[in-house]
Length: 312
Image (cartoon, rainbow, N blue to C red; front, side, top):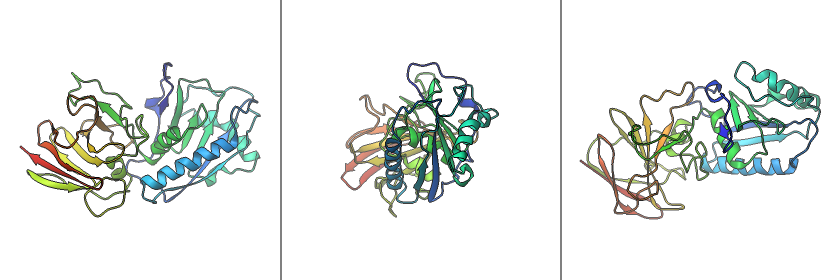
């Protein structure tokens, strides 16, 4: 769910229902966007189509061509007689969507033919911009690329991408959407290596079990070389990846073994301050100590690969 800033959020997050974690999206995902209102046409249909095209390009790039959006957008359906409710949950959402769905069917759009249906209802004055219920999505504003990627990620089975300064939650506050890189947080760089693994876009990555020097490549292109390094600890699993744009550095994410977010895949927590510097990555020459485990140093950083040394 993407929330509106500075607004009270309804008690909706706990009621969101998603597909089983790890269920990779189809190569060709059919998406319908239903534009429905009580009379207004607050933004152009052409702009919505253009945004969908941009989201499709992002997904194709991030998934290495394994996911494509085949999308349709209805014209503005302006026959709604009441403003849609914000008090949605999995038991009431079908009733909330019913008037817009009825108008879409009347306009010749069979919603059952689509993998995902996005209901864009700008008359709903809610404390959130988007919320996902299985393979149905409710938007309360004009779609943006980031908003679409976030909610589509939920339909694929991903949970929120979190962020924290450290893994000691007594000292460091956990931000539910604090990952500044992933669309499942507040970022727009790319889905993380962990999320790509969950979705089946990259294979299982090597596990580090002993002090050693590793070479990894960024998870931005298909490769037979390691695209991330995985470290298991008693508290959970660490995912380490190398990025070259817009910076060259190692990024650390932690999947807490005790974090059980229902039917979503377990969320990863981006470490926002792996050093004393206010940035969520380490650069060449810097190190990060994984709690209860290895010290990790970035010893070489080029435009194509990194050398990473693990020591005790």
